[in-house]
Image (tube, rainbow, N blue to C red; front, side, top):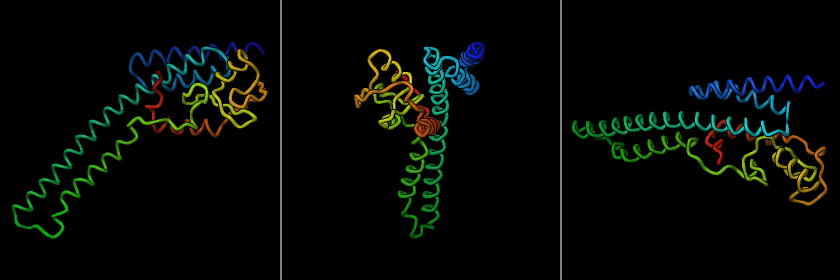
Length: 209
């Protein structure tokens, strides 16, 4: 049985080192994939170990850098497209005036420009950092969940954090103060999926520190 943790640790280390090497070459997408594999294997090999946290930190950094690079590119492209559309509307308005073909709708030029701005502002919303919803954050660390577990009292914590509390502080729920044991912790799959969906859409939330 002891061979399995050793096997997983070797596989984890291989994916981890490859992920870091890819990130050094700024190959973010490939690096992220390798680090995600390392994280999954790390949770199997040493679910309470420091290595899981270390891998997460590198993965979060990679995801944030990838988002930052893509966000900068998107912002530049959106701004250029917005300026081109505004110029086209203004030119159309100018030509209509020059040719004397102004109709009853021509006075809506300002409304069209404002609508255009609203459209582009909406398109840029996902790249604007805001607050992470409270229900996606651990009540102890206030950080976004990585591996959420739920207690019998219905409170969700970050696994490593609550396990550390139970080991070093005492076997009780830090919020309700009710007796709590590690065997009672159950993965909160609903929150885990909600966090994944949020991070997929808002990768700026990977930023740590």
